[in-house]
Image (cartoon, rainbow, N blue to C red; front, side, top):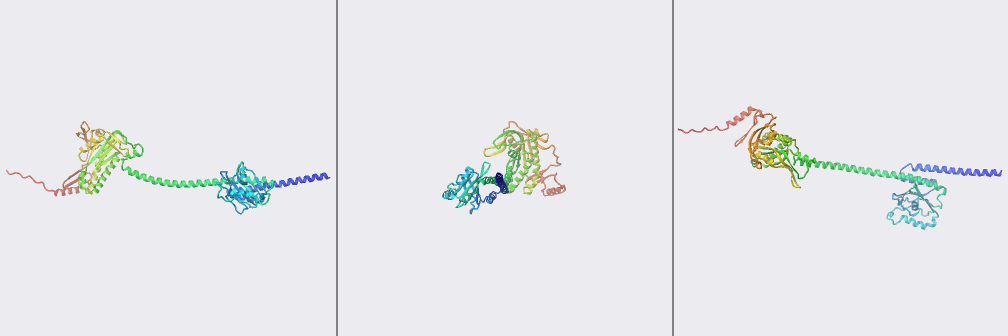
Length: 511
């Protein structure tokens, strides 16, 4: 049975070979699974690299090894982790195409170097080129780790599909590092490491970008906070400045300028306006009698009170000329010629009433002689708008209508409102008037008929009229409507009469 025995022996040998190959494949799968599970358990680049090097030493006895990563510019590799060397050399750089590692990175193929003891001088030269290159990008870098008595070296590209991630380098004091059978497995493990390293590097980049984004958000938040504070401060400054500027303009003009309805340019237009002009009688004499501080206080009080009345009725305050006031209705806002004229006369009536209440205030300040006002009102076509230069503008009204209002004021009686016929025709249904004299005005070819304002049609009539007189040695101000104690007033007037000297009778000539 020799043939049967031989066949049996062949079958056993084949079976043993198959068994060994199966055991090897099983071991290889276990190694791949173990390496894959451990290096994918973290997203820390250095931990992945150190784990990989430790496992390669455990499975293949690679006592001296290192992993280098390709930089983003694809120009150099940098040492990420080392195993077995006295100096770890982390951060050392190898330019692509220089030395064994650099050539592997360039060609992307495994490269073996053996019997290096006979080529030590050559290797030393290569190492000097790597660590002491004159390339400015690699000068003053960390030295690449390596064995002084190295006999063999294998460098394996770490690939992710067609993309190079890095290089796995192994050195040995022996001639052979691993056999051909392990080459495929080591290549698979190197590519597994490449996948893990690439994922970790992408995660690291995303974390870095996230941190940069968060830092940018923090800086932006700080900037916004500072900006909001600056905006609030600037807004407060602008509001304060706006409040100050508002005092130099009539409210209607101020609103028109800052709303953009009125351009800040030299421009005028002809419009029908109702012009009001008032002037205090005896103010010049008063300036000579009062101290400047008291005079300023009284004038400020008077102009403030009159301005409040003008604003409430919608008048545009043109200007103050000492104690004189110029107000007009119809621009920049108009309710119609009739309504503007009625509002202007109503404003004048209220100003007279307010002036009466101010006299008691002035008497307390030492102004014994009451001040009286003259008022003139005319409705006509005037020129209104921005006058002046390119550097300074004045929003005002000019024309014969303004001159006529001024002439009406000068011809008015004390504490009387004198209006033109043009104004009277517009307000006669709302205002009781008494026809006055016709006056001649320069620039007007015909006499101007005037009317004295008596009262508003819808005004509640007073039971008595006020009495105010001021003569040397006697100042009298009587308001029966607001008088509360009539008996005390009679006693006071009686006592005053007793102090007056009796009237002397004229002596008759004897016949």
